[in-house]
Image (cartoon, rainbow, N blue to C red; front, side, top):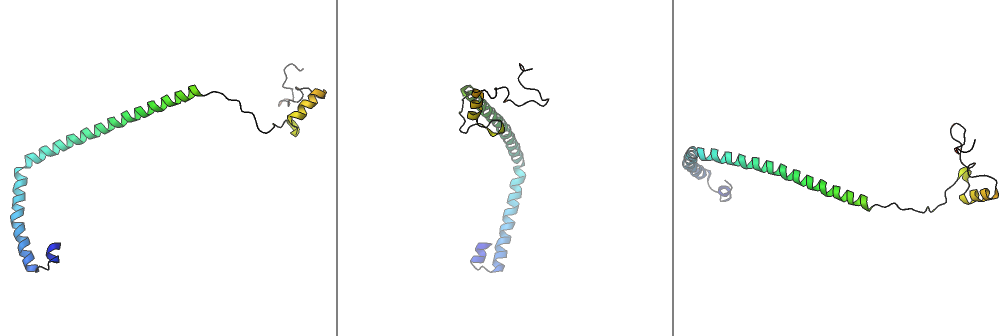
Amino acid sequence: FYTAGAMKMRWSRFLLLDGLGIVLLVPLLIWLGYTSAGLIEEMIETVQKVERGLLWGSIAGTLVLAGCLWWWRRRRQLRQRSEMKEAFVQPQKPIQGPAGSSPEEQSAEEVAGNTTPSETKSDGPTGESEDPAKP
């Protein structure tokens, strides 16, 4: 169609040649379809078998890949757990005690005898001391 239009073919000549092509080609294609119907059905069955095989193969491949990934991650986690060691980290800022006093001030008061370490602990919700040895 495009070539006939680009070559500025007359529409009457185009219709004549197109009709001649239809008259020759359509019966040939119908005859080929009729005689090769069995072959076409066999090909459809073959394609369906191949499609089923591809489906099951892709499902099995996905399961194997997922299993390998799970196994690899599990091994890595176990390796990391065995390599983990507890580390002590020295705090950079002094820890604030009760009433905003620093640890140096608390230890100076304890040395001076003003308080004992058990007195610096806060009382529980019942008002009793947390030290079990203290009555």
